[in-house]
Image 1 (cartoon, rainbow, N blue to C red):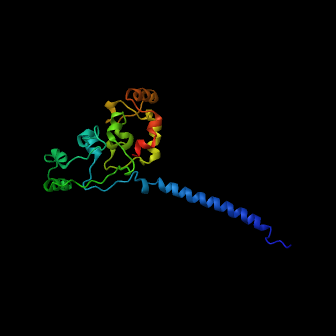
Image 2: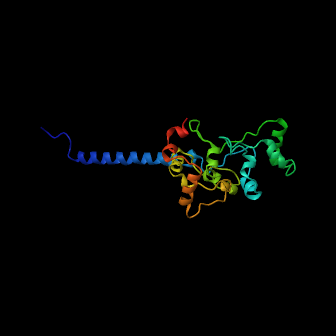
Image 3: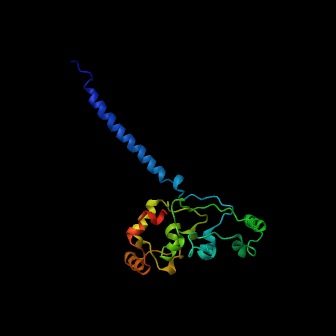
Length: 219
């Protein structure tokens, strides 16, 4: 019987398979890179706001505590957004005629809240409670970065499930004394693992199995 395929077909088949594998790997790599790019995660991207609020000025420069504006961060799931009246506590006296702050004054006149655009937002299927984290010794800067240095607010972490789970697997690396939770300049000490382990016991941090259980975040 005559040979149907030329013996060079073996080389062609092997080359095709290799190129197929390399092509699939390349496509997968590009997809992963895109998934973690700022275009998808929003990390480093400034969201346009009705007023260009500067944390660097208010927090880093003026020393305003996080809780002055985010009043419910210690007691509720949501940290809360400042009301227009909170802004006008100062700005009825300071920069009261600034064109930049006209949207704030208009909000007060119309009794309509400013349409702030969320920078940090978790999906509806994921439950996040600020008060639990704050009261267990997780600081603002752990998730939000150095807000006191940001002229305009942007994300510093993806907030992906993998990022959250990595912390839940070993929370001792980020735990700090409660009086340092709102200190954006806090840095972990050289013996953080030791300090974190002590704080985990003191604050009754649940075990790893519970912290990484699906029902902890997906309710």
